[in-house]
Amino acid sequence: MADNIYHDLRHFLDQFPFGYPETESGIEIEILKRLFTEDEAELALKLTVIPEEVESISKRTGLPSDELHKRLEEMAQKGLVFRISRHEKNQYNAIPFVVGLYEYSVKKMDSELAGLCREYVDTVYMDEIGATDIPSLKVVPIGTKIGAGTELLPYHNIVENVRKAKRIAVAECICRKEKRLLGEGCTHPLEACLTFGITADYYIESGMGREISAEEAIQIIEEADKSGLVHTATNTRSMSMICNCCPCCCPFMIAITKSANLTSVSGCPGSLRGTCRPPTDNTGSYLRRSQGVGELPCAMSTSGSANWDCPSTRPRSARTTLTPRSSSASPPTICASWA
Image (cartoon, rainbow, N blue to C red):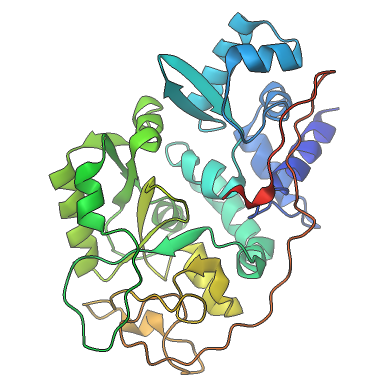
């Protein structure tokens, strides 16, 4: 029974654009067992990716509202479901492994969990990131002068949008934290992941990040810029987060170096020809492929001189809907292109 629940949860998570593929070793099940109890896994399977109020989930699942609210709130505090507060009512929805369960484990990440995640990423998840046709992240430019002839697409102006944010939080970079727990990594700033609006609410209220002012957020971005980090955001209409990524720890950057799939990050020279600034310190060696063929294809270069051909990538047509395990009522489903 227990293993069936975790295998069902793995299958459910695998329906997201960035899925949760299985391995021969079953390491992905071990990660789920570290994150979820059996009851939590069972409840996660009853959720959809559409935020729902407790009353709606209760009607659909037959679970009592009071009990359901308590359990969902406990799971939100653990980073196992996403919580949105609207009109003094909470709504809850299922989340993927990335961006989701992995990032939200920042406070519970220890050397054992870091080792499991590292093994899983190295075994199958690098290929998962490199294979998708759906960009999960996009590169955003900072408002500084760059060389003539460089094309900047009309993405968010970071500083302007930061100042407009209703609430801002900062958290530790899960990628750099994992690496450091394993005795590896770099010396780039650890507290560097910014969240905004309802995502900031979630981080602050779940104890995963601390609230900061717009000016402090801008200072973090500027320091990250000087450190040579790449500013990336979730590929959504509104700016919910900014990660300041390094190509030595970030799985996305490592994956596109490995696979040369430029669609993993929107704004890459081979896909949208967007550009971002190069590092200003001595970490430039990280930004080149070992073959020495131009710049890394993930919008880390302002030169725009690299000529990369986007390879055809594995389609994700099988990932069409995310349907929760439910009772008699027909739950809402959502197309996997929601991200």
